[in-house]
Length: 126
Image 1 (spheres, helix red, strand yellow):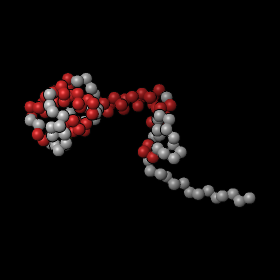
Image 2 (cartoon, rainbow, N blue to C red):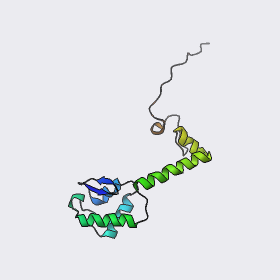
Image 3 (cartoon, rainbow, N blue to C red):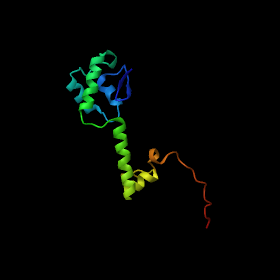
Image 4 (cartoon, helix red, strand yellow):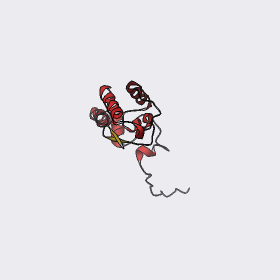
């Protein structure tokens, strides 16, 4: 397996798709990096020479994009700043709820976690 930015890149995938395994690199950035280096988009990672991988590494270093650890650190600092300021979004992050206005009555299971069942209340009979 090839290593780029501390991440193992899948061998059997096309280089355009495989670069997206690195956090912070999407399809558009991947295409841009590969075209700058001058490699065919359809080349599989296992078919790349070591010299081509080195060119890709240097192209990623030259570009001013944040990837992997730097990106994750920046996102965490932004969330911490929102929480410290006491903004609404910061409170939502702190409470583990959606921060951008989504409904929470029926959805938001990804943020809220597994459903917690509450015991039934006795119904009032009139």
